[in-house]
Amino acid sequence: MFLKNFSISDDFINLNYEGEYFDLHNNFELTNIISNQEQKTICLIFTKGNGNWIPENSPNCLMLLFKNVTQVYYKDHDINYPLECIHQDQFTINMLGFSFDDSNIMDGVTDNIPRKDLPALLCILETGKAIKIIAESVELFIE
Image 1 (cartoon, helix red, strand yellow):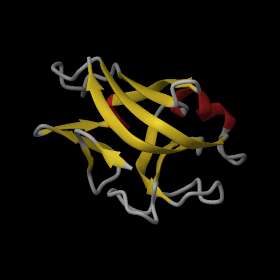
Image 2: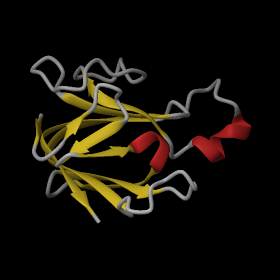
Image 3: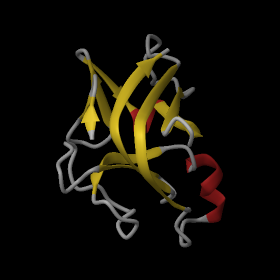
Image 4: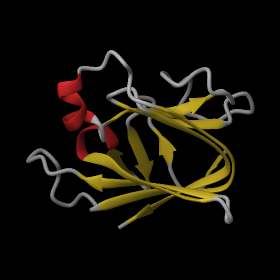
């Protein structure tokens, strides 16, 4: 997968874009996933959180647009995740990085850099819910 205009930090929670770092775990929530099968695209939409620690100049929205999507895998919340915590944690990113091309590994990323043997971008939420996307490219858009 080709990362067009950003990179993923080796901490697996920050996106690096033109000298700026966007902390997906602490400052943003994954609020929407838009899929268009005809155009073979998927867009992950991260919305700025409302904590008082979040820098005021943080963008309101980050969008990762995947093009020429060939495969998508989904995993639901972990069955052992405390039910009383799902509501508060269901949109919080735990880690984002690259993984293998199958649905067997959905609970941990392998690297922050794509490789031939790691073609899938895996986004894991605090609750264990996950989406793994295999695409030709992904681009970051900021609003």
